[in-house]
Image (cartoon, rainbow, N blue to C red; front, side):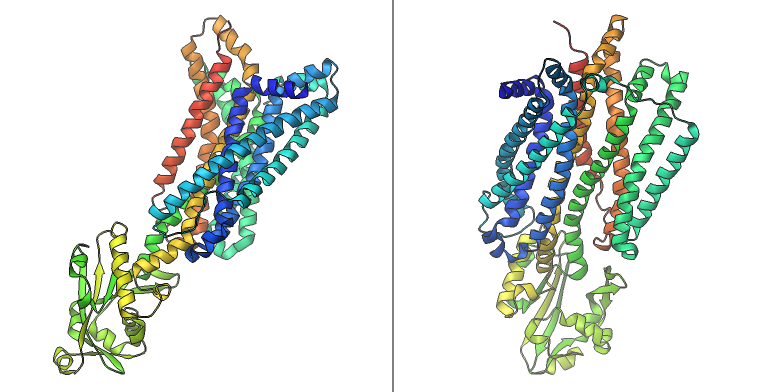
Length: 600
């Protein structure tokens, strides 16, 4: 009987459960994907360049698990609020609290278990897709990767089973402890909006001050370090809550007091709708703003690290391709690169020295990385032959372009006539730049590997002068951040949008009577739909704006890891806003179908 009632309850709230179900499926799918990447031992041991990604995916799993736990408790509380009238009716008919608790437990655990199973299957598909993306998008060569991992599946099922077990117990205890009258009337009891203006003003000042302090702590983490992160987290969360609690109330009060605005169309009704449960909205909007910042921040930082990889490689390695003994290289392959810079330096090597022509360096100065107090600068030094002949540091820069077997020898720059008199075989050092490194990556990599294998016994991993090898090293170190950021961003977006939907839809049934009254007095349906779009738009827009502000200031924390964390910022923002708009449209459609449905 309990199973039948539970299934009937789920069926009766199917639309609401689908929203929760989709969020849980996405969370479990991404969790499985992280675990499959981090626990695939054969994959990791055979692809040493990816070893640094293991920690990234483990960290992503932990962070996703923490947020998922909070999301499950929060989302389930909305579903319980929707069904608590049903539970109250069961109690009035004589059902014992223990039976109600069992029913809630069955509903929560059943939805969670089904979502985890489906999410794991989706996660296998995501893991397979990631394998393809790692090869094509990140230019990594990987082997022994399998999308299915029994260990990852077991960890995912156990972790989410424990989460849903805890959530089921929490939900059951929360409902059974309430009195029947409270269950019947709780969702329809409005919170009082009136507050003393001086108290609202003080809260606004304290909230803005807390945000400003948190932003300041994030702006200089090199100085504040872990204390800065902890202080910023506390003050930004507090400031977000206080700003919503004070500024939102003040703005709504001011708008309602303005006859010019409030009396236009259904604006006064819309403002009243927003004010009806403003206390609950304050907590929910604060959480949504923080989740929005986490989601957008994860996506932005992840894509930022990807954008940073070619910039870091370029700053360390000025030339796209180095060809030692260039006279042996395939001339046609080099010509197909269409070089924008192609400099050839003549070499002669003896037992104790490597000779170069000074005039060639005076005519075409050597490019070398320039270091400042913060590390490598994006601008290069231009080293002439006269400078290299006298400066040992400049000679070390030239030595970086030689093969390993030459670097222990003395560098000597001589005139063209003296160079011609040296009795040794003449070779050439060819340094090349191309118009677009990433587009030419494959061809450059082929030539660089051939150059390395034909001219030196030095392993590729030790060569930090060829840009393609530097790029591969940084790519192996940081590409995991891109995937973690992308999938965490999607997971957090799903959760925050679901929470907003739950909050809005949980009050929809109580709003039906108000919309029916407006229709009975002749209000056009188009105006009612316009009011719905405005009301829900505010609830989506306000946490979104504050979340974006959090991200813009939060990116300051990554200035020590990235050269420009704000580079191509429009890309993640556009992706996120587009996905966010989809959830807004879906929420408007669901809410409209509830409050404006025609009685048959």
